Image (cartoon, rainbow, N blue to C red; front, side, top):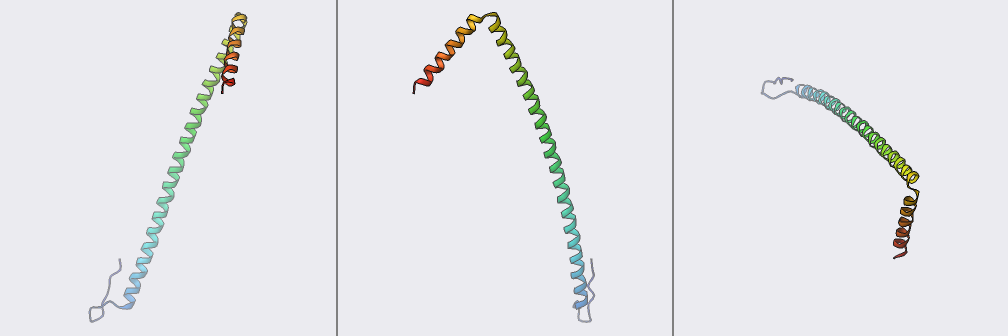
Length: 108
């Protein structure tokens, strides 16, 4: 911090005031740099956290997708086994479902 020297009347000289203004400008420039660096660091932290969450969401999505695929394959295998072991019952169920769908879509 700059000190003010005074002329004989106790008032600061123009040179002293100019020097203080220059010191303030340099201090403000330094503070602006510090704030900008802090903003960049915070932005990088947020970006890294967001990226990590996206990766976690992708992994969770893959797990759910894999489980759904396994369930679909199991259902397909079970239905294929049911049709193979009980074809008449499977045909009756298919006809019944077809009748219901046709009846529901015909009623408007």
